[in-house]
Amino acid sequence: MYIVIGGGGQVGYYLAKGLLEQGHEVLLLEKDSRRVRQLSEELGAAVTQGDACEARTLEDVGTERAGLVIAVTGEDEDNLVICQLAKARFKVRRTVARVNNPRNDELFKRLGIDVTVSPTRTILHMIEAEIPHHTLVPLMTLTQAGLRLVEVTVPDDSPAAQKTLKELNLPISVNLALVVRGTENITPSGDTLILPEDRIFALVTVDGEAALRQTLLPEMV
Image (tube, rainbow, N blue to C red; front, side, top):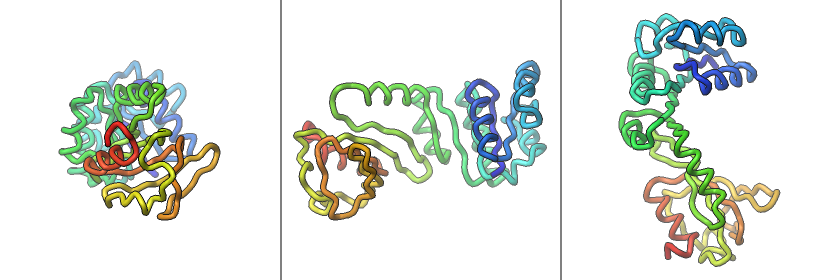
């Protein structure tokens, strides 16, 4: 896949390096000439100087054939512009934007960005995951689809424990994707029995997230 990345900071650098190692065709755009020289020492021709917020720059690097555009500058406004240009002007199917201020998540969602990644939220979620109590942890937001990937560990006193999925009668807004039980990965079906300490991964809407929380976590009952 041809992937265009806007922003040559540490995030952009490691993304480009990792994607190149996976065999993708990558073009990293960075405005600062000194930073471009630094990056070029390792990434070579995969780095070019240019402002990814400008349509002319995106046109010059062939964004119309890109399968994915990723915007990871330190400015939310720039990341939004890059992704909107990619979609509206160059018809790129998938965009990913770094959201530095979590308050901007909803704005990015309304404006059609496919996936947002917030370093602040990620750190908070990691902290939540380490807190010694059971909670529902958002892992990723798929903004265009209106879905979130969430993880929850079933507590011992969960009202769902020892019941099958069909007994729980979860709404269609909750799609259980995976149940992790110890070292076992289980693709859930209606007959899957939910046990304490199961780690459940699910795709949910906003309403589905509330329903899943209410079903699995006793404090919400």
